[in-house]
Length: 232
Image (cartoon, rainbow, N blue to C red):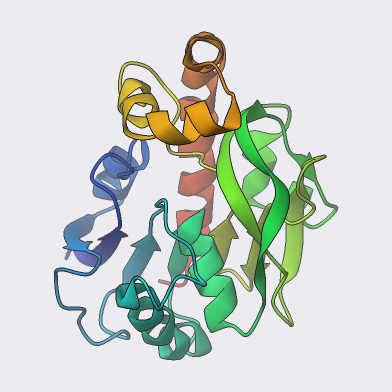
């Protein structure tokens, strides 16, 4: 019998990426919900929720009311410890729903860089990402929610991932993206941001060619390990 997986998406090209086939292999029937457009179901209904990234922020609720709706929608789901995975903005929304702050960073973190895993992080699914440069693309960062474990850091951001038990996982980085040719959509879609931050798309393209394939393999292994740990 298939399991239901709700995928909450904020931007068309920031999709499940390499994670889609892993979830389908795991028996999940995926339902995609577009933020600000599609209605959200009962937060406790889906067997799995994945909240994806996007260019807006947790604190932008006045300009984008859907952000506040999503944060509040996550509160009862996370309180019930229902399986939930957040990526970048998705992880920030989860952290905010758990009462943690999300604040602007001194400088945006965009590009490929490895994680420094904490002792807890190195013992769990993120161990699959050890020594693998992952894709970072964010200008805000979350505090670790009360009761959660900090799993990873980089030199630019001390809070790259958190877990609350085996069912709640928030990732500030992007283990699902970064491989060509799909990564071209990111560079085109975020071209204004890259120009504003002085980042050369060609350097990202080169790094994508170097690190994208290994990130896909490691990210998929990480996701499979996390899914295996979920309660039946």
